Length: 512
Image (cartoon, rainbow, N blue to C red; front, top):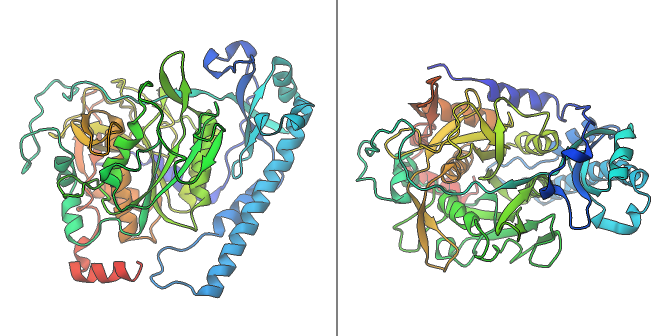
């Protein structure tokens, strides 16, 4: 089977060209801005892409100052200190280069912006742009400024909610895959389905690595996360972080919102699938011994009693993960969120968000994104439509495309089990529920990617994507085009037999 190599090729190209293409679209009209992107004071939320002098060189220097996690032996105190200093210097130069242009553009658009402080503009640190709230007059001033390359709505994307029913899109019965017990709702079935149990038996369980979950936060006290190190952050354009501000980091920063809002504990369920482990051993996520970086990128929408994620908060969350690249071994990022309908790659429309994803790819960190639960046969949601993301569709445990899955030819990279997946919820420290959705499929890939990174930390995103493609199980869509994609099998995708379990454990103890 010859698979579509569009995303692999795009990933290769971005390593040669380290910044986003300069999109010159400044045609945004005030009338086009939806109410969800208008503040209570009547200002519009927008994202502005900036022409920053030397941005390619600044970005390249920042990417270069990254720890090589493939080395089994630490480089030594002096070398580590030198690299840390180089990274601080490079990142600070990149941040300052962006900030200097952003400050001038914001002041030109709205002379009172400096007095407003952070509320006027949330300047990105690694992507040449900023998020602003602007009046109609300020929007016109931005459009006239030659330093502004692109203006887009700072959209509030909905959560990809779980769906009822776990049947296939073709309407066939969901017979369990070979050698699996009856299709009862258990994560304990989907982990063996993708070969994770065989990988664990070889000693590779994600020890010493982190999965990053950009979602609705986490119930850190849930028993599925016992003994794990959990780093937390929050980015909320509506200032709904626990401190009442638009950003926060540290313990408690990613606490989920009240159960009064739909989707409130989505992040806890996703985190359990990617890296949770029940203390009695009866239920485990894919990278079951990995730690977690939980980032709440959602804001509360009281009028609709739900939570939604602004594009700017997603960018800030991705930047936060990038800032930790030298502090923690990060396997992959999970984004089970998005919306809209895109029939082809949406790179230009999502240029700043793509640039943040590309920065992570350049330091070997993949961003895995759900395709969506609308049942589309020709399209996926955003940001899953970004070419350099790893876009995930859902199959049942019988390896049939799930009825709710979004499919787009050339847009979906992998299938993963997404139906009847039991994982942790936010109701209590011992609560569990079975959910269906591409949101459940995606953390299977995120956890798998982390195991692959642990086993071969020198390999980049394209190399691991190729391994998973070649080692996967071909599954055909039920949509009219009849295309195939690989359903992941982590055990088939890597030479796990190269070392015995005992040798693997020794390597893990040595930090490999």
